[in-house]
Length: 508
Image: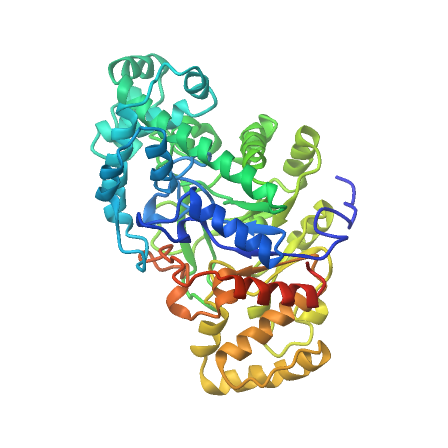
């Protein structure tokens, strides 16, 4: 790949975006959906002057309710389907919707939803015409493996694919044909779930785009082991003859963890991917750009080098670094799909190889203001060190909110941060007294907006200046994450205030 030009989708016009996942939207039924509340949020974003709405992966969640652990990388989350839309289509009765009603001021109750909402979706499917021509065509669009996987798993009491009978475990064509013939209704139900999700999503995206807002989506580097992706494509992963992982992904020991992190995802057999022209990845990226306008690639450094650990190890201490596909993958993507609008998640400990890959691809990286204040004048996250070809964030879904970040900091550290902050605020002409953490958080938000990044993205929690109780995710904590739902109304007054801020920094 030739040295990429510096100018791409993120450069040339300053703009701003807001980060909030669909699940965090308000509503009656326990979780945000693709219905009227999502359109109302798009209306707010337009009034506030945002050009982008960033979300997390839309996939059907798996372990720990995480959108980064899915049963199928190309799936849509059934829990995000809007029940009101199904009622308007006469697939549900309004009285039936009460079975899935939850307090509107609470967090997402995933356990109860997994039972109640799937039961309602089954009722909707029972009234759906499976002979519909559009639905029949949808079954051939790459979702059959997903539907078979879900149906077989249900038949096996939720057991992972490695425990299924051999013919089904090994994806034998004749066995799958027989299973589908004997379980057609169950397979069709899971196809219906995806069909309805993507009908609703495409209608929502069309509405959002009509407001002049582009959607930033997200794809993880790795897929879950117990997934239709691995079950249907075992050759693409480092598995043994029994289809169990030989190697798993993680990160090595560092300042934050003496034993490293053991993620447990299967690692790719990149040699096989290369032999197949990276077809699986090209298809995955093609699908992503069918859903989103811009795609953030999580853990981008893994394409240069990735850390693999022996399956069964108790910690990541014995893992080793391995070479990833590098520019070869992105050459193949560019050849097949042309220029695409990526954001490369390049956070964490980086080395020369990652910087070289970033330079060669030309993709914008991420700059997070929360990481800026370590006292190092060369810190790449300090506003004065940020360049145009980047996307600046006050924080990501893995960070505390700005107010929470400041509030939970020891007082001496907070005072040191304020001492570093004051001259930067003065230089950026941001008036601030730093008397409360909310005021300091507002000023840090202003610093992010004032920097040179072509795009600046603000989590909705940092618009509201809310605390740690609204945090979306705490990395390495296995449960209780991804449950945040917005409680405050996004008022016209807030939209006017935010718009004024964006105009001040030339982002609107």
